[in-house]
Image (cartoon, rainbow, N blue to C red; front, side):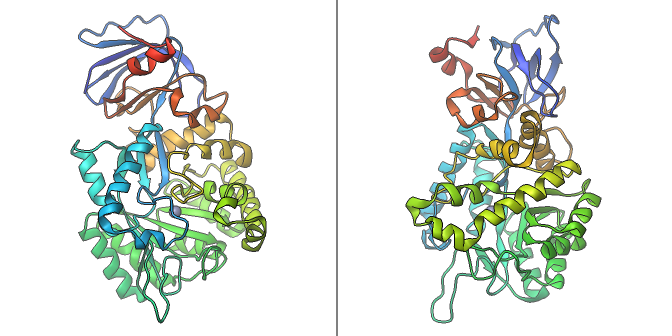
Length: 425
Ligand SMILES: [Zn+2]
């Protein structure tokens, strides 16, 4: 970790407030000082970086990350790949996401049990490059649910861990916790891509309750896959912490989500839906397939639901099931554009979802995802103003500096050579 003084920056602090000129001092892994223009901070012993007007902002948080997803065309691709190759692919994905400005990943399921855990540990120990990672369990699912790929005559696997009944669910949850996960994941709904549909609620209330009880007994978090309104309500009734998708939430579910807004986070995972409609033809998802899957209807419901959740102040994170063949890892920042175009967020509000909101999901202490004195030093310097156009965040060449935990992943001097705009003195 270096002591760094960044001058002449335009600071987006992660809260959604407008950018303002200023300078900061980082010492160790924390932001020591934040000051406005003209403060002329003295910071002895610091490396000085002249940002020359570039935007300084918190590192982004992928709120529905799947670092173990390997560009799969079918869910079973993730079961078919041997664990050795799978681990290496996961390490590459983690580094790639950091290269794209994601300094934190909140994993929404690990395709094999210990992949997230091991990658988290190696990164935390400094032996591998990658973002902060909250490691997830596989998707705990019921027989015939999303993630159960087997049939009577053929055993197959993908990202699911099948368990039926509260006792078996409890065992699966404890087993994952014993192996080191931070987050459990349960599939309460089905999904339109598989046998059990998105509108169906296939995990029983007793099963959900058992999983939540285990997670909270061990001070872990629990996230769920819930598309149907009934699934969303079941998740809320049972105390699930993070609810993904939610697009079929009815008025009662919306009221319940709003009532729980200080406790929960939600994430639409819209990238997969968008790309399935618009960019998956070469993978055999023709317009007819899209039509049969009802994907446009899912997108329309998502837009309606998340405009409402935004209006009601529910905390929403970006992250869109990137890691399928038609949602390549590294393109995750496209969600920002969808948040603006589909959900009505201003660019600054969408960026807040990607920084301060995701940061408080990672660490409830509120010291991640913000540019604030005392906060953890996960920072980006961006060539341009993403609060005017969030699409800038999709171009890794615009990321002049990437700092995680006070250490440079990308030093601005390297970027500055090509650009000539950022100078390290
Ligand atoms: Zn997912």
